[in-house]
Each structure stands twice: as structure tokens, then as C-alpha cells.
Length: 151
Image (cartoon, rainbow, N blue to C red):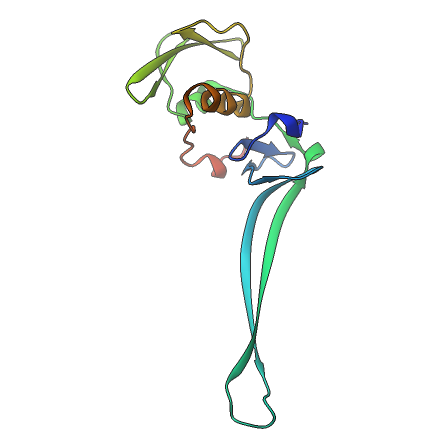
């Protein structure tokens, strides 16, 4: 379970069924991860005339999940590679943001920033990494094909 206070829009999390979802809205006790508009058109009889009139209705279809039914995505080497990290030397991982390279150390399931300033706490979950990078660099982490992965 993840507290909604830890989440922000765009975070990737996992449902208890293993589906990776993207947070679109955070409500009091649910997370909205998909919404779409459905268009319904029905012909309307206009007093016996051969008039082609239609009644149009727009409905928003929302998919949401209870906050108790979502879990964080724990970091792994595979997740780091999907996110664009490169591994050169054992536990050392590098992420390029703009013209800067950020050196990280990934040991025992925890990611720690090494350069330009060492990080005291380890990042264990994907949404924590997303929030950290957005806070320090205004950077949104890319996830090509992440939604199709079952963890």
C-alpha cells in the first residue's frame, strides 16, 4: 500500500493484479488511472417529419483503483535500464539529464545519488525516484513500454 501523500500525477505504480498504471488523479481513497469520453448518439423522432435529428450524450468513463490495492514498483536493474540508466561499473549507474550526468549507486535494492552530492537516504521505489528527479531537476522520467510490463 502507498500513501496518497507520496504520489503525484504521472507516477507509475502497480495494482495487486500486477498491472502497471499511471496516476492521473488522486482522490480521497482512490487513484484514477484511465479516463475516456464516450459519445452516444441516438436518433430522435421529430413529430413524424423525416428530419435526421440526434440526441447526443457525452459520458466520461473512469477507471480507478482503491489506494489499499496499489503497491510501489521496487527498483531493480531492469527497471533502471527501462528508465534510461546506464551501468558501467558494478553498482555504478549513470543517468543523463540534459547536458549533465548523474552518478548513482544501486546496492541492496537502494539507489543513492553519488555525484554531484551524495544522497543520505536510499530510493527503493520507482515513484520515489520519479518524485526525486522532478523535485531536483524538474525532470520527468521516461518509460517506453512500461505499461505493458507485468511485474
